[in-house]
Image (cartoon, rainbow, N blue to C red; front, side, top):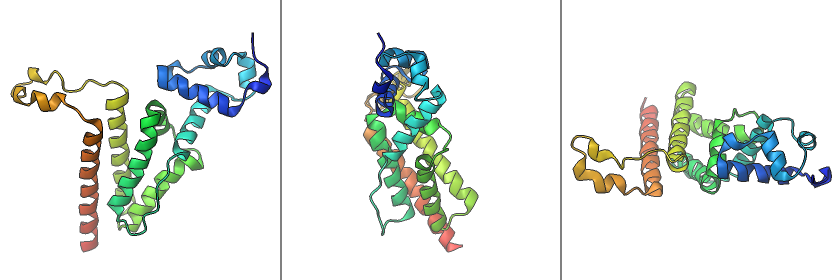
Length: 204
């Protein structure tokens, strides 16, 4: 038996999509599967959302609009970028697969464009030229996505490293992963590289 259309709300639809993505992955999301989960007809669902693509855009909007960065007036460029990345990661740890959706969707709304605009403005203010600023932003995005893939997509780690010549003495270190410590270590390396590049730009 289907529920009446009036019971279908945007928040209920989005909450169900988030649950589907986090449980079974984005591939599991379809209009038919969503209608089944909500207990409604597919046609009733189309009265509220036009397509799966539109659903994923709304998920991306919800994820990015939840990212909050505390103002840091005295922070340098590198520190500000670190704060932005950590703010996103805070959301990603709650809904990691939805965070991957947000990063993979084309930024077509204000909530998705704003973080990139803020990061680029920070880099430009620090003295980086346009193309260099964009490349730095892409590097941070690639790092975030790679880290999420390792943690969320169950990508194989280095547990089989003993098969690699010379790696056996390091097996304990290679197998003992701490995702949070690993993430902060890499983020700090990126921040140091940005700070060094900013100093070089100032010296020119």
